[in-house]
Length: 269
Image (cartoon, rainbow, N blue to C red; front, side, top):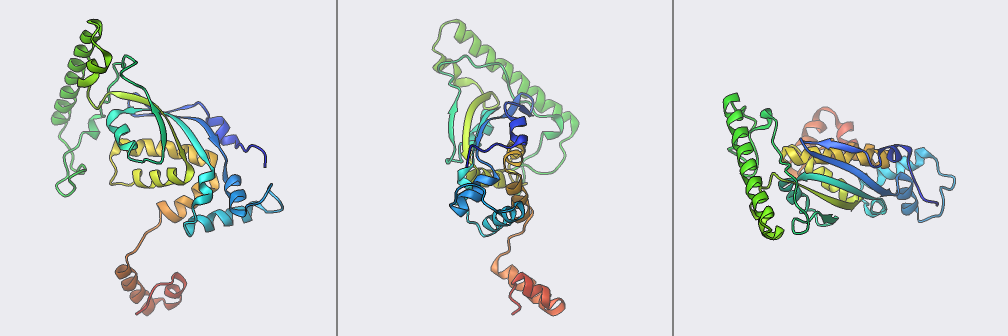
C-alpha cells in the first residue's frame, strides 16, 4: 500500500487549534489512517476486495475486543504550546517521544496562563487532587486573578533583570512559575493516544488538560474517523461494570427482560 493520506488530515496540517489564553495544538505530521490499521490487522498488501463496511466492522471488532497492536501503526506528531503545569501531566504518559524548548538555551517569553474568572475553583472536599463544583464568588475570583497577575509580573521582572545582568539563563529561569507557557514537539502512536485521551477527557481530569485532550482528539477524528467513531462507541460512551454490578443488573433484567439479559451476557443468578 502506498503512503496514506486523508483529505481531512491534510486540511488540518499546520493549523493551530487554540487552547487556553496563549496555547495551541498543531498537527505537524501523521503516518497512516484507518486503512493502515485494517491492512496491518489483515497482514496483507493493498486494499484488496474488502469494502468500507468490512473495514469498519474489523476496526469495531479490534477496539471492542481490545486487540490494539494494529493501532500502533498510526503515528501523530504535534507541536504543543501549554502551561508548564499541564506539560508536567503530559509527560506522565511515557509512551510519547518529545522535545521541549529549553530555558537554558532560550529566553522564555512573558506568557502566563490566567484562567477565565468562571474557572477559578475551590478545592474539592472529597478529591484531594481535584476541584469542587462549588461556585467561587465573583469578588474572590477577581482577587485570585489579581494575585496571579501580580506574581507573574514580579517573577518575570526578576527574570529579565537577571538576564540583562548576564546571569546564566539556566539559573535566571528557576523562579519562573508553573503557569509559564512552554512548547514541545510531541509524538505518539494511535493506541497510546487513545489511552491518553480516555484518561484526560474524563471529568476527573484537570480542566486545563481536558481542553488539550479535546484538541488532540480533533486530529484523531481527521486522520482515523472510523477509529474515532468506534472509540466513542466502545470506550468514551460505554460503561464498565464490576462483577457485583453486572450480577445485580443481570438479576433485574432476568426478571423483567430475560432476552435482553441473555443478549448482553449478564449473569442472571
